[in-house]
Length: 228
Image (cartoon, rainbow, N blue to C red; front, side, top):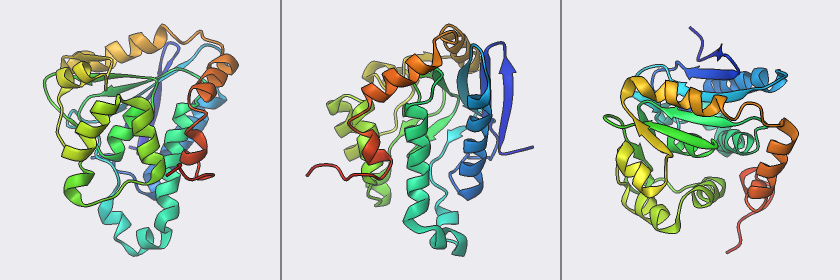
């Protein structure tokens, strides 16, 4: 089984993340970019859904054990920028994207979900959490910029400064996700939402998203620093 499986349900490409907790390390990021390459090379109506391969995890964020290894230390800050580059890629992806959050979405895993156009989350199990305040990790500027662009200011403060764990219904109330569903319904609802958008013109869709996020894309791409 590969780290990312790509299947198709009609016009919807489904990327299933199969790396356990789906933590970001070199292999996982390369597999995710490869899957996105495959989707982007397609033609005709298309949309994208990502989901976790087990019901417990969507993605648990950066692979801290790998980052502490010789390989991870050698990759350094450049690897974190590569992860943020995936977020930037999704923000401007030329086809509609929906995150089917079927389990925990923690830290960079939550940010991965936020980088999609829309989100459907499991209502009865799993949490969205930005726990950096409790694990003593400062966010890279691109991560902060993404969170601020996607969430209301009050929600940014609540999630970042408390590390609160929020379930599906709580995330709907705060505008973090668009819908919450029972576990078996998360992926079908995400696919249905994505399919309804699959006929959108790719060039127009990408241009609109570049315009929406023009202010933060240079930060996510590491081209400029945020203003003090």
